Structure formats: structure tokens, C-alpha cells
Image (cartoon, rainbow, N blue to C red; front, side):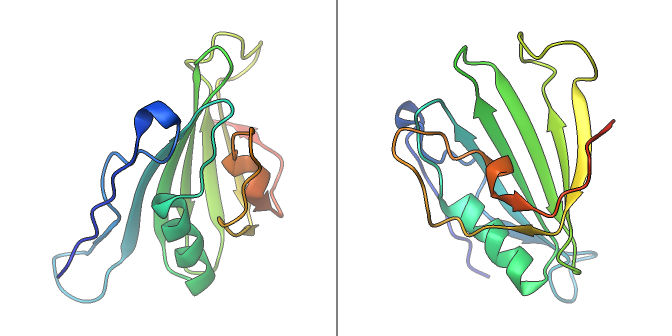
Length: 145
């Protein structure tokens, strides 16, 4: 089994996976149960549409279960972490964690919502962080976790 290794440049704000996209299987036999697409880190003014995001979008389109962790840094450098999990029915569960954002405001730091689709990872806008939430469609109202 071959594994695709992905590298990025953290200083430019491009994709910086913590691990390469891979598959996990139950018991080591049979087809892959969940595709682990890795992670991405997006800073203010940076672009992101790299291999981890592409892996997740393709898995959703194919009806495969997959995971992606997208960390978005605000202008102060504080992270908001989006943990995305797709299922075989094209549903996407998202947990948004703003617990480390100093200016998040009052209320819960963690929210959960479910979406029906995610846009292609190909398009980016120069000078703007490509926030994963801007690509999600058909989402339920967020509920505190």
C-alpha cells in the first residue's frame, strides 16, 4: 500500500498537514472505513486549497467516510479549529472550537452543526483566508457542544 506524503510551508500560510492523508481500517481487513485526510492551517491573508482539503472534498463526493481538521488563525493569531467528519450518505458533521480565541465573545466555545455538501477546493481568493465554513452548504443551526 502506498502513502502520499504531503509537505507545506508554514511561513507562507499554505497547507501544513500534521499527517499525510491515509485510510484506517477496522481490524486490518477489508476496505478502508474512514479516510484520514489530515489537517490544514490557514492564516489571515493566506490561501488554502491543498491536498488535505482536496482529499476531504473528493471523499464526500464519492460517498466515503473521511475526516479533516482545519485550523484558521484570526488576525490576532488565535486559532479556531474545525473538525469535519463525513459519512457515506454525503453528510458532514462539523465541530467548531473557538476555546483558544481571546476575542470569541460570550457563550459556548464549541459548536456543532451538520451540512449536506462542501464546495470544490479549487477556487481561492487572493488576499483572503479560504475559510472552510465558507465552503459548506445546507447546514443546520449550530448547537453548543
